[in-house]
Image 1 (cartoon, rainbow, N blue to C red):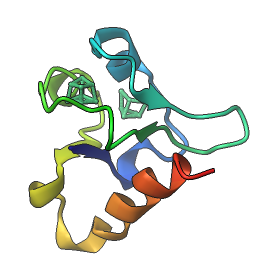
Image 2: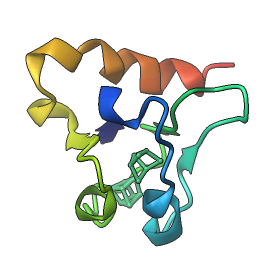
Image 3: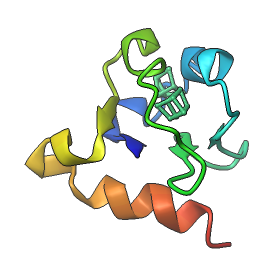
Image 4: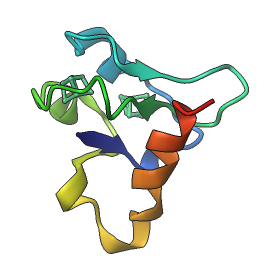
Length: 79
Ligand code: SF4
Ligand code: F3S
């Protein structure tokens, strides 16, 4: 699945939400970023170019320094 990483923190532009065909990008008002549900994402890639701060990556292309965000996205949906 695709993953939202550190650049989204404090930005939450939400352009990604508008283009996701399966509505799998969410985050509460108390969260400082949004997260992609790995069990719902269909890997369409539509969200990636929409993000103005380049926060979205395919999970195997997440920069090493942000690798922890793969688990953070998944954990959000375990609540
Ligand atoms: Fe949604 Fe497609 Fe982005 Fe996955 S890759 S979060 S399905 S827009
Ligand atoms: Fe965040 Fe970019 Fe979406 S800033 S909310 S990942 S468009």
